[in-house]
Length: 85
Length: 85
Image (cartoon, rainbow over all chains, first blue to last red; front, side, top):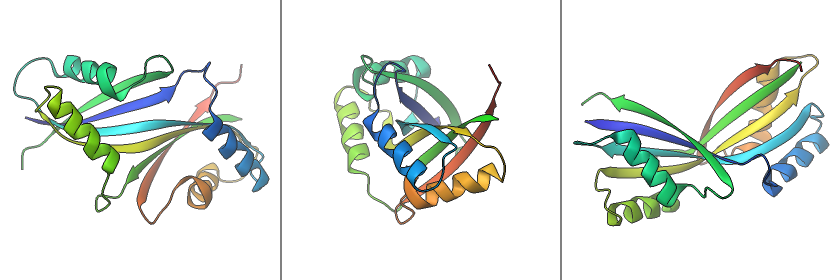
């Protein structure tokens, strides 16, 4: 079975986001005063062929081991089954 | 009215993703052979106070002008109203 997994990685609220601040200032200068804050995170899309075991536990492990820096980032996961071609 | 806007930015299919390839290889070496592909994109969260006008048109404009490189990236938008505190 093939799965499409999305991992949404965002900086923890307490963490300063220089990239986001720069984008906020740039947009306000460009004439978008309504933009109060921009926060920049990561969207990782994985294609996974899982034969056995608990896929969400595996993905959680993968996030903790490689994809997410838990000191400064939070994450959430979406798993979608892909119809066989 | 305050809105929370999410912009999901992904590399076009035809574009090579070195970061994603590196993550794929690393995960396979770490013992996750089921991971066939990783694609790394961006998740941008905006807090926007919109008084008038068409918010989704404004966000689309912001994406095209600053947040997205349309030569190599695709994007999608989610807009959520934030209840007044």
